[in-house]
Image (cartoon, rainbow, N blue to C red; front, side, top):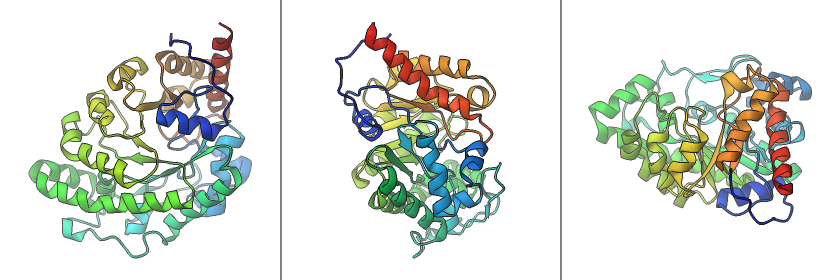
Length: 350
């Protein structure tokens, strides 16, 4: 059980999230969505469906707002996919229908060499990036005083998968590590430019997904190729950064904690207790309610237990481990906020 802290005066969602990302005291644990809580039910509720909600600023705004208005989260995240920049870069995107995620056709790479990497002049005015900036600006105007607006800018490792293809990109890391580093160095400009534009539009914090996932690369790979670059992002992007990497990542959490990132959004393949023990308060953790088994397939009681596991381990911000399945029941998502609030009420009277 975590030690009871001194009372903190009541906060709104924005104050709560930003304090937790700084490691400051909060009135209660923030409920945080660093990726996506969009579901088909929520799409139907506000008349904003995929694929249009990924490409139309007004529909993106309406769907994103439900994370706060319907689910009670302390954050709003309007970037539901991981392909907005890749579309602007020229990747072939399969946009799918309302019950499927859009994906980049990674078997159709657009780059093969470092010199192929170009930042297009319309990176920030392309319809699939501009809609994000416009949605953030509207969310900031409508909700920005009360709730934290979180943007998303993809890291160079993820962009590499989309633009070079997963297999060629990973083979490059084995066959020619220096070439890989040159590619990452060139792609980081895209991460920075889109991140800065979202801050200017009104984002309070940014999720930075960089999918050097536990099932594809080791912790040593992270240290070799990404740790220094992620440290640079902290200096070059002036807002709290939330690093997201899926999978079993305990083997790289110590490296991640040294980057200066504000937070690490961690997967349910890592237990809350071991994750808290590794990072040792050097970085805030956000997580890690299981998506495919718990949120999608189980009931609110199961969700409650996972939330309690995180709270009792001392995880500073609680939320789903990643973008939730589109068929996730709304009641399971609402249970996250309900459990956090109930737990803090119980703690206050102990």
